[in-house]
Length: 244
Image 1: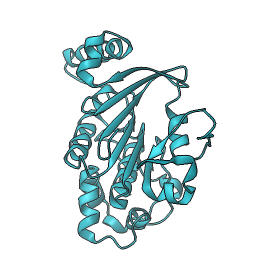
Image 2: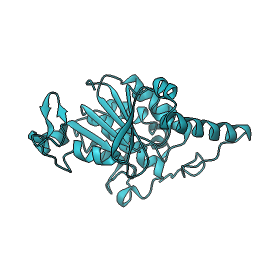
Image 3: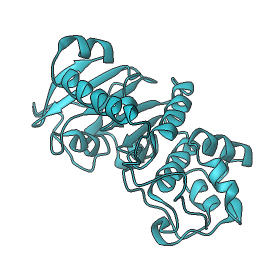
Image 4: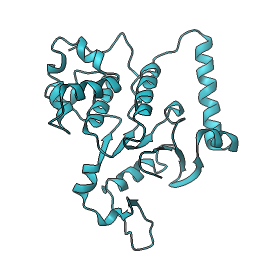
């Protein structure tokens, strides 16, 4: 894929998505000259680049992100200590967390508990997304990083990421297909292999695994909407967000 594009990885647990991410971060190593495959970054074999260099080029948000028992500001500035207040607000607005922070008694000076325990799951994910956006790394990886936010908030974040298209290469692992419909390339994994690849419309037309999953999720959404209320399946709602 080209720099600045968005890649989506889909597949059941254990299909190889997270393994690929670990290879990209060189948490796992491979023999790039031994016929076992090749991963290149700007034309350079990944296994020949230092781990420090690679990890400076990549910003990652996991499903359960790590936050420090420091202030919100401190957590945001961890990857880019010289960022201005305007840069911070731009990042938190893109991650749909600015208004929540402003609602806290101490605002950006709010002290977080160990691992961000004082925040809800969705708030932790959105704060972590703001942190990586502030870092401005060339490669952004979201590993199921929107699983704890509601659908409305997810839409706001995806719209903001779309407006930043071209500023960084984005890799998204997601279970909600609504997160990946605008991706430049979607890879569908099964048992360690890529079984489908393409864009949203093309994969729907193929009638394969992606198309079947899309039909299931769409039917579920229509069923919920027909009852006039969509339940909060993420564990986060507007009424139970944490306000330190």
